[in-house]
Amino acid sequence: MSATGHIGHTPPPFFKRGPAPLARLAFFVTLALLLLVADLRFRTLEVARMAVATVLWPLQKAVLLPVEGAGEAGNYFSNLASLQQENVELRQRQLAQANLLLRQAHLEDENRRLRALLAMQERLAVPARAAEILYAARDPFARRVIIDRGLTHGLETGQAVIDDLGVVGQITRAFPLTSEVTLLTDKNQLIPVQVARSGLRAVVAGAGSGAMELKFLPANADVQPDDTLVTSGLDGIYLPGLPVAKVISIDRNNSFSFARIEAMPLAGVERHGQVLVLGRRIAPELPEEPKEPVKKPGKGKRTAK
Amino acid sequence: MIQPTHSSRRILLPARGWFIYLSLCAALVLNLIPLGRLPGIPDWVALTLVFWCIHQPLKVGMGAAFFFGLAMDVANASVMGQHALAYVLLAFAAGGLSRRILWFPVVQQALHVLPLLLGTQFIMLLIRLVTGAEFPGVLYFLSSFVAVLLWHPLNYILLLPQYRAIEHDENRPI
Image (cartoon, rainbow over all chains, first blue to last red):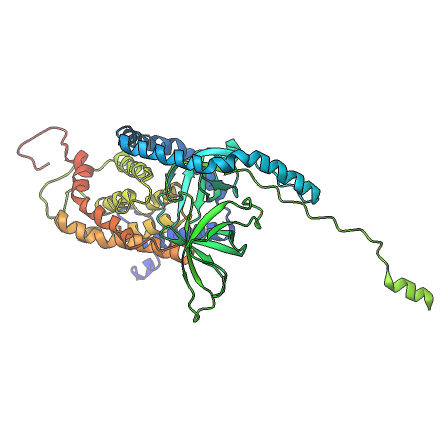
């Protein structure tokens, strides 16, 4: 009888080990899944992420030092010949662009006057801020880089980032001292473009492995290899006319409803260096609707009766 | 765990908590080094975590794995919970297999660790593919193989403080 009296009582444990491993596993897996869903669905964890990123920043900066040092040492010992070659290339490019650059001010003046004549909305110049790419994020699933300017320098999410050759990407997360730029070659990064030759509008998305894909164009679309794609500016984020990519190959297979058009980015998207963060474009205001006196149709009829 | 492996006759000093967490923090710092998209860089936190979960299953477990997973999520700018989930499952598996793995010599321990690390990478791959990321290529899995090659030196470095006897005696196995 004494044995039955103990039913329901577990024997005293010799070693306290807390809950069973399976229970702990269930708890932590549930917690991790909750975080996952909360981050993906509601984006509520951006504040927590910003706080932890700010705390981690000195550590990251300290870790960055040896890598930077190694890079600088490499630069110091880099070949004189390669520098000379780069110098020659830069001079040639400058000369090739001199024609356009020298007449730029004149053309802009002319453009403003013509636009004024046509009573069109003036295109506002946007402020730009130079930044340097610090490093590529280690996440192998996305193509992001970190630049050395952040919220304290007036940057915010959504701003466009360009380099000397074309569009690089867009700021997707702004931290106090750094920002995270999602490159154009990221699979989730879309940019509205138009074909410079024909004016055809389309959307370009990253296709992985450094390439891009022109999406949702019919098989008979007016696109040719070597066509340049520039931003169309329809999104209100990118200024119109910035070079984005060059068409590499077109596969017009009639068994699919869309053509498979591959493009390569023009900017040095996967390289490190200086970039320019463009200020937020001020979207043109919608024209005010003319105020007409609204007639109340019901009342007049009733009084007529 | 008072021996380097269960079949060893060597007796170790008890592991110190601060050294365990210092090594995990050092691994986190190593993971923060921005090496870009270079393939084959081992995940130091996962490797150190699996080592301590095998050698000290009562001291390091899923709680530490979850905490360091969150730190990695933020540092890596990846999806919150990706590393946390993978590391918790890794710690559970390593803690459960601890008593089996420690019967083997170090080289064969590494062969047991390989599927654990590959499984961790596979879980992270699965999470990211479900959320619509691109497949990073087969070279992504190279980092587990590199990590396993480092198991022997890691074993030596992380057990070094426990090998140091307070007073040296030739006739004692400590």
